[in-house]
Length: 61
Image 1 (cartoon, rainbow, N blue to C red):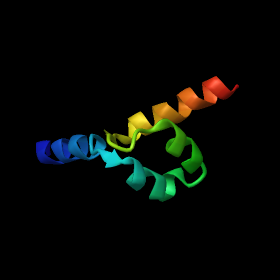
Image 2 (cartoon, helix red, strand yellow):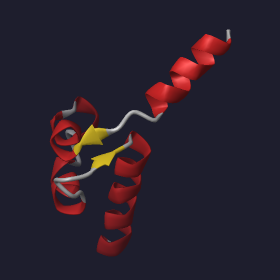
Image 3 (cartoon, rainbow, N blue to C red):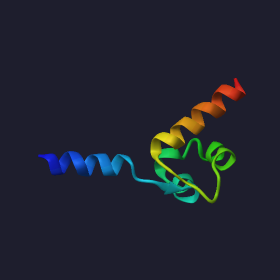
Image 4 (tube, rainbow, N blue to C red):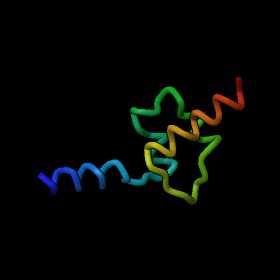
């Protein structure tokens, strides 16, 4: 049971490059925002990518 929780925690903390995030189906509608907001040389969790999108939308609105 603890192994499943550990695996889920690690999966939720997985980091992805800007290119990987932009190519994912999850962000197909916000790809342009990710290109503008993320740094090519860094890796991001899904939560960090979501936060970058939120920050962009706040600036825009």
